[in-house]
Length: 116
Image (cartoon, rainbow, N blue to C red; front, side, top):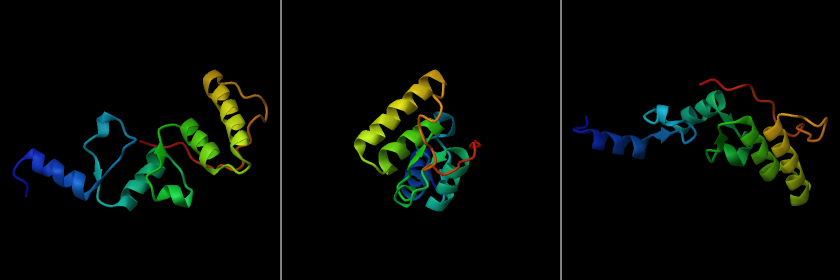
């Protein structure tokens, strides 16, 4: 048992996992293990499913943020190709208009809309 709130919060922060993506509304929600937090990322957010990212808490609030991450971190073909794709993605995100097949998302894994 913990004698005061500070000791309890210290325990939670030291021995449990907290979602860095969730808003302040969920700031006192903790997870017992990383696998529990990872399940939360997959259900409630847009988590990168690349092996090197799954182990490093890489998750985002929006699909656009995940797509930008995938383009910059996981796209083959060099930085100029990634930069061009990111620019096109930014136009789509800002305007809501898709210029045909301007950006190919075939390298991105299918992701369901998250629940919260």
